[in-house]
Amino acid sequence: MAVIRDMMPVFELFQPASIDEALNLLDAHQGDVWVLGGGMDSFDWLKDRTKRVSTVVDLSQVGELRGIKEANGGLEIGAMTTLTEVVHHPAVQAKFRILAEAAEVVASPQIRNQATLGGNVSQDTRCWYYRSGWSCYRAGGNICYADTPTAINREHAILQQDRCVAVSPSDTAPALVALDAEFVIRSKGGERVVKAEDYFLGPQIDITHMTVLRPGELLTAIRIPATWANAQFYWEKVRDRNVWDFPLVNVASAMKLSGTTISDVRIAVGAVAARPLRLTAVEAATKGKPRTEETASAAGELAIQGATPLRYNAYKIPLMRNLVKRAIRGNAQATT
Amino acid sequence: MSTDPEKPTEQESDVTRREFLGTAGAALVVAAAVPGVAVEGQTARPAGTPSRPRTQIRLTVNGAQRRLEVDDHWTLAEMLRDHLRLTGTKLGCERGECGACTVILDGKTVYSCSYLAVWADGKSVTTVEGLAKNGALDPLQQAFVVHDAPQCGFCTSGQLMSAKALLSANPAPTVAEVHAALAGNLCRCSNYSRIAEAVVAAGAAGATRRTSGGGQ
Image (cartoon, rainbow over all chains, first blue to last red; front, side, top):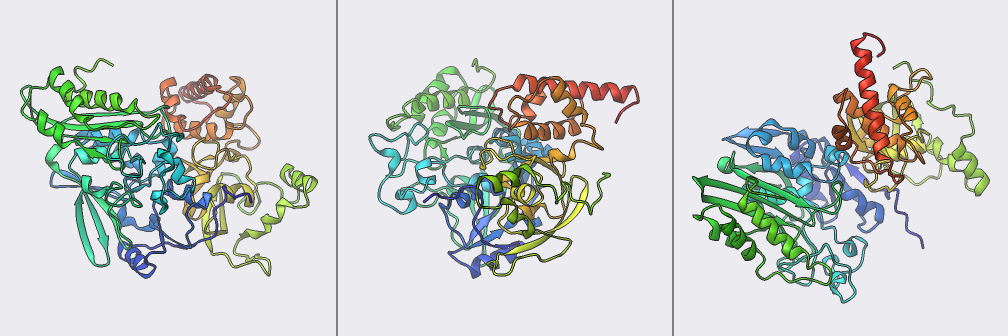
């Protein structure tokens, strides 16, 4: 039978006006509720009937989830702040430009006007086998359709594959990891704060969830500490088309220099594994080294250690190596 | 803003192309869905219809204030096209991946296929039907005609809305600025250079009108 893929099925819509009200609703409907942010991930699932939900908690009316506040030299960004607002915010532009650059290359102008920062980091993977409703590991089944001899897996993982080979599709996530951001998670029971790199889960930890959010919890804000304000930043995203497309690989780095020596550095890569990867080995190996072509090349080689290609994504290995190299070398010496 | 709020944008009594195709091609009458919209507080839900969660919203559509009861799961495109008969807004992919359904919402472009109708509560929506004033094309539309911007025309309304939002924020954009602002609108005929040419020309013509003190 044909499946309707345009109109969404009927659901019960709740529009709480505050975080507390939203948390009460999540608590009352635990396990059977869909949290709706900007909708750019949600509506596809609902239209395709791949996820069936009866109750939707829409965060659009929760004013306290929107906006960017400056605090202690850093920022606190509400989870429902749109990507367009992030891109144009003067403090983001002035101090944490890498986040503006990452948010600005997400999808298209219309999507950035509506998509939220919280949604961009919390969205589900874009593996089309999974999104088409195939009963794969991530959907609770017992096979990965993207990792069979005939699978089409050009966009899939090269690192930390564990049954599932889907990748993290977020552009802002690696930038937030590089900025040492913290994610504020609230539930009726209280608040917990996790480091950006710990917000994301790989299949070895939880094969059916991309983030640490549990039922009844909401990501309410993202805090960016002053630590990396006005550091040397590098951001790059490689994709097939300059609009809409998710990253094939993206990279974000924040660096502090003393003269030409790298005194401290953060670097994260996206779309190579199920979670954005902070490259701690690269950070350790480059700290204290001069920022040179040689240091950058060694960093690139180190980054791809252990990378394993699938049938169609071997190109991602040299791509990741080169992006890491550029992210360490920086814009000044970049030639292409 | 001269539209009479009480007057439907299209004459309800007219047989539209859509209804004609619906009745001529199949037993289903497509227009049967239209009475489902209750304007000005009427509850027109036919007896026996399963209960669907509905919400009353107030919004401005092309300058006219409307009060509507909408299903909670409707997209803005669904409301505009199927229930207000504003079929100038096109649906291409239904996934926010083509731009045909672009409308302007409080000055910002959104994909109406991927935006809930209830979210438009209290907002002002402009569709392609809202561009022409008193029967005269908007200068931007006129520029599209002069520069042959539409080929098959299916993406045109979306392109116009992205261009209109750009010109409102940046009245005389460069080609590069036009390409950036219209990046979220695909044209399968690939007539991008003519579209950009038309938008730049509309901006330049607007600048001339402004400096000479005439026009809008």
